[in-house]
Length: 128
Image 1 (spheres, rainbow, N blue to C red):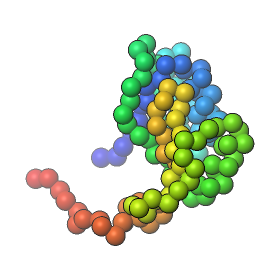
Image 2 (image 1 turned 120 degrees about the vertical axis):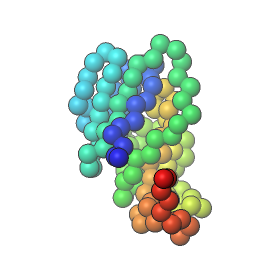
Image 3 (image 1 turned 90 degrees about the vertical axis):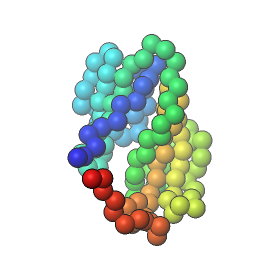
Image 4 (image 1 turned 180 degrees about the vertical axis):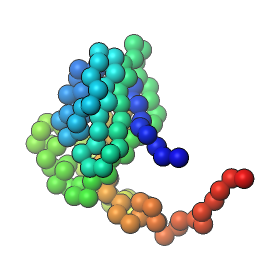
């Protein structure tokens, strides 16, 4: 199995599309109620779905970038506001936090080898 995509709920499609284009994603689907993007690196995708009710999404979406500090500086020059500047975390990731126009939480991060192989990694587990 492979993760195909994540769909985020949004209240304003035009504003949200502009936000994600400013972050550097490439839009591959464009409708009044649905938009889909491909990440600048790799083939990961995510989408936006227009909601009538206010968005209350407790999920966090993570986007990885090797040169996190430079990316954050570039995005700030483009007018993107951050809730947290890049900081080293106790779980060995470096993260910056921001929110999209519908208040979906986004973490831009770099974890390197620790993303898949942290010191506390467990032995592979499978269900029967």
